[in-house]
Image 1 (cartoon, helix red, strand yellow):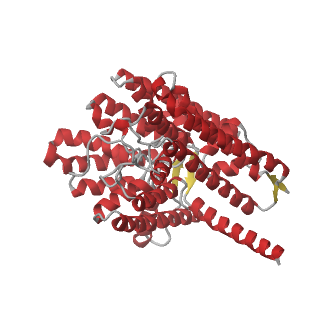
Image 2 (cartoon, one colour):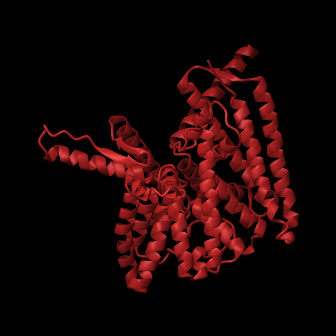
Image 3 (cartoon, helix red, strand yellow):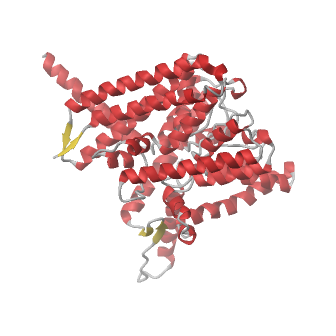
Length: 492
């Protein structure tokens, strides 16, 4: 029988979240004027560490036994779901306790941070350095995921289940801990290079660090009201595009690139599809924008904002409120498609959309070609050529169908809560569900709570890939119901 210390895993993750919340205090020597805010981070973090320590101690005495793989996976999903909700609640506390934001706004900012979305209700022009750093740091850690960070420090028998449940499909090295450490080392390397590149382009060091963290995590929080557009710098835009594309690329592909296997990396179907989409959408968007700003400026804005939408980063160079309907429609499509599987990006993911298109083509071929023709479709992953079988097709269609239904439901909900038209609602909810962070003007400090809640639901479902949330909620309610029945019997 397999032995799974469920409570212990939860406790470890709670301790780690507490440490992450305390981390922003490290910048106080550089910004001593923010010392008054330290208590809110220390208090929140220490309480999470204390609670996690108690859960760890309790978990050691009371272990969960199961020989059923499905049951073990279910409990792993529940652990991941619990951890994310705990992280959201704990992450919101510094915003709320310090009076920076109201309660629902604090939860919203925390959800947007950890899920690497980037929609914000804060006025960054009036926000202190410690909170600006905290928001960016949340996105940087959220891009890796809580389980990934825990595995780097300590791993157990069920770490692989937790790793998969959080949405990390690829094991880059034979050992799971080595995989996590390899990804973390790549992440740190790109952060150093990205920060240095921003500084060289003229961005202040603090802004460079924050923007590099958010670009790589495809997060999109900025230290400026006008995002990247505030700098009016082509070189900064180019650096940001490169970092966004790195962030939206599968970690396994990035490892190939770092090892010098460029040809093998360029053969990956997802990578080819990424550049094909940009090749199609950027000229179309540039033509749509050229009427109001000229072809040169239209091409510049189209390239940056298309890369931002497809990578699900959420940085912008201008407001979208005056954009033509065609350009808005193209942005919505890109946000729905999203980035690479096994990356920090959100959305449907490039591989799933690629597979759907392949299945559509295969279905058309069946009607046109003789019945005797045998078709064995494949696609290329970083690990090699993979067969497109019935199970893969079923999983892909199921996920895409569920995702689009949620998109429709969320869009309609926003038209009610925000009192806006369908175009704006589609844009804003595509951004929330895809964890993108671009806004057409619906989300800000004055946004009502009902709209923020709808967007929070979209961000959580988008980051945890829908089924983990749905199964976690279902089995969580089932366990509560079972516990209620036991208590009722005991009372009788």
